[in-house]
Length: 227
Image (cartoon, rainbow, N blue to C red):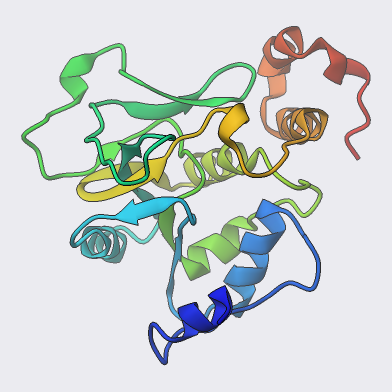
């Protein structure tokens, strides 16, 4: 019994596309989007627990706002205990000058309403778990095929959605537990220089006059070949 067969057994609607070789995160998502038949794409990760009724709020929001990229609120699964589930605090996703994505409280905390059932606009997407219309995804041209392996998809999606007339939101009524892991707990290696190269390529394309701030954080990128 294989993992593929277990997935196929979930529903006759399930199709499993297996890459013949490792392609990296962004290219795997691009392949999945090419193969998808529905009008809405939903990207998930393996190390999550989907909470009750998590999908409907995302679909409803995208139906009403076709240019939205909407992600669930990501609750916390402790990296040393997958059987636990902790409700996340209030905040939003953004990235720093080195392009690493972080979850923080906004400067004006009044922008967060814990009693609201409406989505909250965010500066950035965390990149891994979200819903988006397939035609909007295709129009944005996600992702740059020269982004390799892992790292940078959150930056490209953020820049393209916001700067091309869309918006990024987190929905409080859609909740998914996510296993947040530090480097020592990852089951796969991450090549940091490759991640930095992806970041440098994105900074050169999107950051214009702000490129200097990224290069101050990552001075090695001033002479790094980025294609």
